[in-house]
Amino acid sequence: KDGRQLKIYENTDELSTDLADYIAELSEASVKERGVFAIALSGGSLISLMSKLCEAPYNKTVDWAKWYIFWADERVVAKNHTDSNYRLAKDGLLSKVPVVPSHIHSINDTVSAEKAAKDYEFVIRQLVRTRIIGVSDISDCPKFDLILLGMGPDGHVASLFPCHSVLDEKEEWVTFITDSPKPPPERITFTLPVINSASNVAVVVTGGSKAEAVHLVIDDAEPDRPSLPAKLVQPTKGNLVWFLDKAAASKLDGT
Ligand code: 6PG
Picture 1: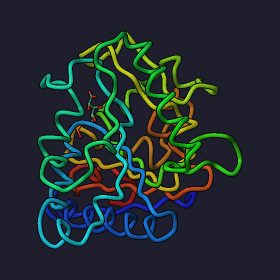
Picture 2 (picture 1 turned 30 degrees about the vertical axis):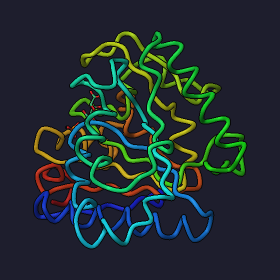
Picture 3 (picture 1 turned 30 degrees about the horizontal axis):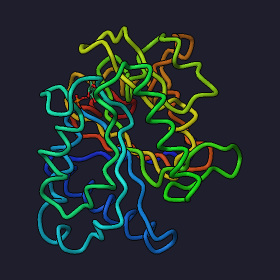
């Protein structure tokens, strides 16, 4: 349905093996086509599920120097804070592979959430202009080669939480919230137009606590309920892949 692909794995080990393969393949294809790979990360368990990329063969075969790294969302805390998505990715992945430090686009952690979102959008605009990040052919939105998302049990993706007004944002690429229901309260986040303009979006979900939300989103159960943010992830032209472990997939219709 909707050109979306569902991948369901016996356990997180099998999931992470396939996730590493998927990312390595997209990286190779993108470097071949555009000379670079523009990838956006998220926080949560995603980074440890990506950790096979630090091992053979990927540590050698992936063209790390061509990676440009962004965050689909970030908590507005200092970069070295334990809550920082940057720090999580740095410790778990980026410090273990030969990425180019100047290609790592973390947020400005010395300003307000509002200013951090504006600054981040400015950086992205510049990199769209130089085509480090592609551009959508139907709007002026950035077209990331890959946006990786996790999903919370409440169906949130990036820092787009259920029923929040930022779900309606149409103009801005990066916006901020100061009332996140999940701490810390201040965050910046890609908006839905940016997520849905990507060439590839992967939603990586593990564990039984997500099973109900996975069911509501994928089976379109209770369509009259206000939409869970994850349900609004529908790339206009790009590919959408859901990586699920058995526990997260356990409430899907037909399982
Ligand atoms: C945050 C978290 C959050 C996370 C999802 C899924 O910013 O509060 O990073 O958005 O990505 O809740 O997290 P898990 O995969 O760890 O469950």
